[in-house]
Length: 284
Ligand SMILES: NC(=O)c1ccc[n+]([C@@H]2O[C@H](COP(=O)([O-])OP(=O)(O)OC[C@H]3O[C@@H](n4cnc5c(N)ncnc54)[C@H](O)[C@@H]3O)[C@@H](O)[C@H]2O)c1
Image (cartoon, rainbow, N blue to C red; front, side, top):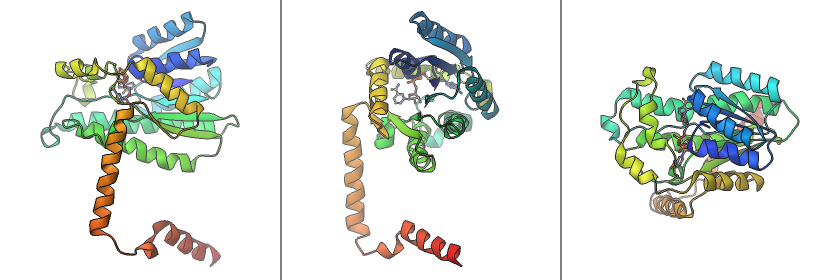
C-alpha cells in the first residue's frame, strides 16, 4: 500500500488502517520526509513493514522514480492512495495571488494525476487486482466553501478525472474517490509549509484551525475509506450530512433543465453520435 501526503492527517490514518487490515508493506510518501519516517516507524512498531519516502508530488519525475523504486523493492502495490493536498488561506478568488492558485492546483490536481499515472501504469501492467483511491472532498458534491475557490475547483476536478480513469483502466484496476467532510488534520497548516517556488510559507489561518478541530477523526475517515474499497464503491463519502449538498445541486440541475431545456434533444446525444460517426469511419 502506498499513500501520498501520508505524514499527517487522513494520509497517516490511511497508512495505519491499511496495516491494521493486513497490508504486508506500507509506503508513506510526503513532502515532509522526516515526518513520513515517523509515521512509518509507528506502523513498523505494530509489526508491519513500512517506509517513509520524501517526495513532492508536483515533481512528476520524482513521483515516477518513487513508483519504480517501490515496485522494485516490494512489488506492485495493491492499493495506492493519491491523497496529498493543500488549502491556501481564505480569500476571494478575484483577490488571490497567482502563486497561491498555482500551488493549490499543482498539488491537488497535477500532483494527484502524476501519482495516478505513475502507479496506475504499474498496476495495469500487472495481473493482480489493484485499487487507486484519490482523495477529493465533500466539496465535489457541491459544498460552496467561500474563500476556497481553487481548492474547491481541484476537488471537483479529481472527481471528474477519476470518472474517466475508471472507464479507461482494465478490470484489474479499480478506482475510488474518497470524499471526506470536515476531518481533524493539519490541513490548516498547509500555508506554513508552502514551498519557495510557490511563494514560500506564511502564517496559517488560526480560525481554520479552530474549525477543523471539530471534525471527524482521521481514523474514522480511514476506516470508512477501506470499508468503501472493500465494497468496491467508486464514490466513498464519509459524512452523511454532505448528501444535502448533493441533493441541493441535483434540485438545481433539474429546475434548470425543466425551465430552459425541456425539448427533445435526444438526436444530439453525444455518445450515440460518436459511436455512429466512428462506426461509419471505421467501416469506410
Ligand atoms: N481535513 C479535512 O477536513 C478534509 C476534508 C476533505 C478532504 N480533505 C483532503 O484530504 C487530503 C489529506 O489532507 P488532510 O486533511 O489529512 O491534511 P494534512 O495537512 O494533515 O495532510 C496533508 C499532507 O499532504 C502533504 N503534502 C502537501 N503538499 C505536498 C506535496 N507537494 N507533495 C507531497 N505531500 C504533500 C503534507 O505535508 C501533509 O502531510 C487532502 O487531499 C485534503 O484536501 C481534507
